[in-house]
Image (cartoon, rainbow, N blue to C red; front, side, top):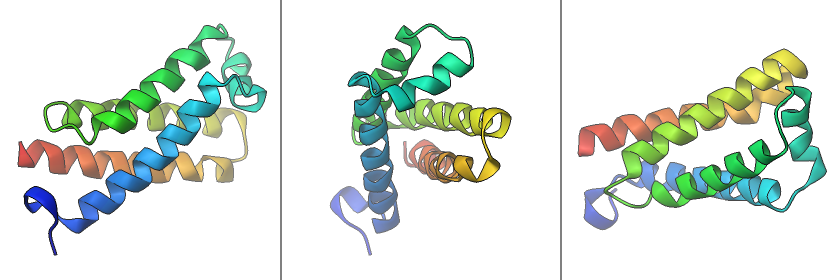
Length: 118
């Protein structure tokens, strides 16, 4: 089954789930939620880093729906997901990194599809 512009339904589903996750995470960072900013502090990064990452997450979440930039947006979100997963491997119990790993898989699948569909 395909929706608008012959895009497979799985691409729409994964795109929507990915966008929801990154808009939520990015919004929390931009809102200054202390819990999400602790990870950057744990790595010794300046506080502005969380705000920059949050803005990039929201931009990427929107970008995966814009045909001209969706491949690059998916790659950027994949890089963010990889960074989050590596953070959890180094600083938290591995189980806390599972959501980041799932988002990494989602964004890599989207990037592969967008590259082939271009």
